Image (tube, rainbow, N blue to C red; front, top):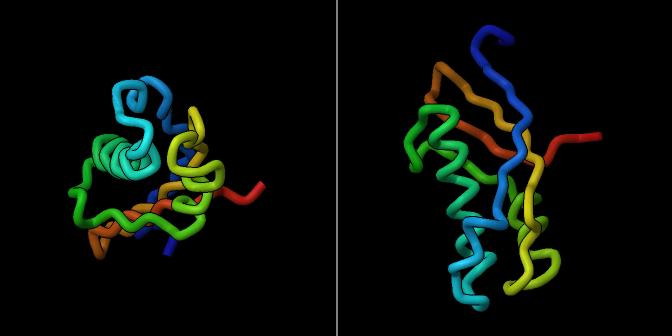
Length: 91
């Protein structure tokens, strides 16, 4: 099973990408930025990326106007299914 998956820990920078976004849309845009960052680095399609609910909760924790400046994520790619799962890493 270990040969069929690829796992990485990434830090997604959000601060600069959200500066020009209206304050009432920052959390929405943060989720899209996370997906596009993972798609770029894992060479996957946006439709094949699945965000865990804990990612969404971490982005929305401080409200719509104040998402985190950077987010540490764990990315697992399943090669046999072309699926990429994004979650929060356990400490």
